[in-house]
Length: 373
Image (cartoon, rainbow, N blue to C red; front, side):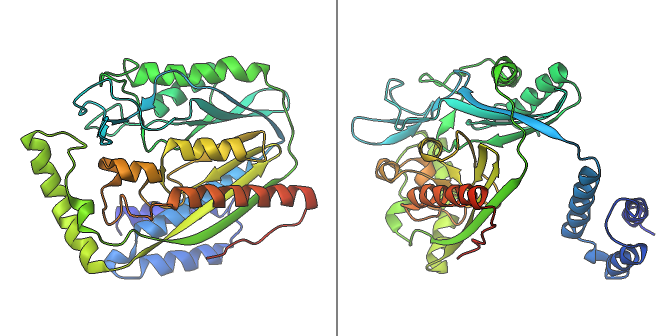
């Protein structure tokens, strides 16, 4: 028997005590996996079992809790990474001919968080929502600044679960006008994120929500049609021979693939989860920051956390004006920059729609079904 088989069988046997499935049910699952072809034990199957097990174990450990949630000023270590020349060309930071080119778009300079506590005040978990590309550490696998923030929170609050949800930051970087980091490294960034939460949450009023409400929609948004002009390099990531060579290598295959595919579409899921006066609304995009800021400002909830890159992936979603300025995030590809130019506005509208839906659920006590395409 393969080692992985042995591990799975052991897990199935142990989970009999916590999963709402009979021993015979576990046996059926095991036979389904272990008597198939050698390659049939898929990652999907392992993840399904692991997810079910984690949910069941967590449910068995549930206890009454209260929350402290707020939106606070974010540490001053982020900036819009797109700089626009007087001629209207967008450049990535560090590649702009003039470091004094202005930022293209306003960005969200606040961050949200939720602290879950036992009724006696002992922290159980912290969820935080910070808007910045989480990639200060290069060329190695790392949880980066968000992971460092979790480390600081656990150091100060004890063995709590820490969850980071990336706020819309498709055009946000930790680099300033001159291309230098606005904070020294991921450790300092993590301390700054955690510090903002640790300073705020002891002062925040607690609430004890009695229910969780959820609304989700899936909308099919068209991809941008093939246009040869989308693949003309505009020097948005530099004008060196190396930059030109990289663009050719990266985007010539993309152009060929987009051209032969014809009109394509992307199913975009937007989900809202309401916990008392706090809401989390998700999207699968690398959404430009101003869209998240708009959602938060127009949300019917006092505290709204906007989480990008959630429940799928649909690539960068710039503003309409950003498409006029060109630059890296607007370069058409099969997957990483694909949606129609008004997709950001659509995601804002759908996000507000599902937020209003969960607000209605709270008011009426009636669930809604919004799985519309």
